[in-house]
Image (cartoon, rainbow, N blue to C red; front, top):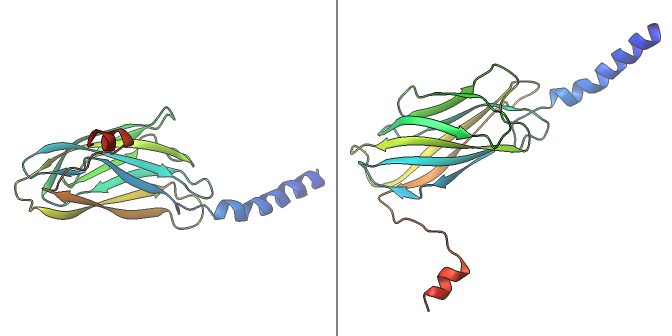
Length: 174
């Protein structure tokens, strides 16, 4: 019995450093669409959020922060079948927060991604030009820092839409 307890204690000591190194480093968010919009329009933003934690910390919350002249009207997500459960909250009105819906360890596992859709009214109070959309992924706070990673995505109001290009598009010009 003593040997078994010693073995368990030794395994716990060896696992401790591995568990303590969990972090959200490497997590990303990309803006998929739209490429531009105009004041007075209602548009749906599509974001692709990936958890590339180097040590299995799971994403619990994903938060998008728009300029204050934007009004978030609603949000949804597609988890690609991983079973994520997020609750949507928009308070203040220019934020879209997808919060852990079941209180578990997190919703987006290491090396998995989710697509988030945020419907936004771009009010006429917005001025044309470049703006930024902030994003934050919060981890399950298991282990060491950092448990939160943030970034900014550039966006242009009143810009020229960018279309995907392909070789067939180029050939059609000639």
